[in-house]
Image (cartoon, rainbow, N blue to C red; front, side, top):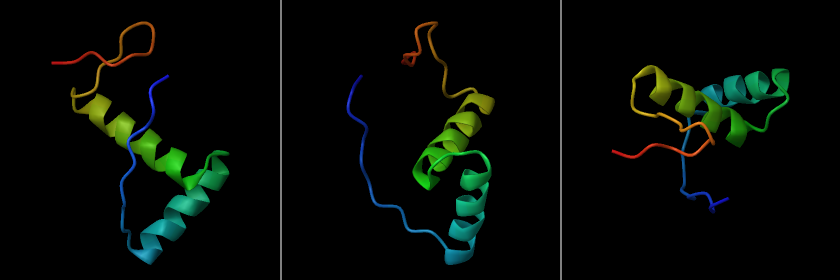
Length: 59
C-alpha cells in the first residue's frame, strides 16, 4: 500500500462538528469520513474509477 498524501485542511468549526458527529455515527475517524465523502463524490462525478483490485485507474 502506498503512503497517503498529507496536507493541511482548514474547516469551519460548525462543519467540523457535523463531520465529527457523522463520523462517530459511522464508526470512522473524521479524517476517514472526509476521505470517504471525497471519494464518493469523485466516483459520482465519474472522476474516480477503481480497478477490480482496489487500485485507481489513471487517465
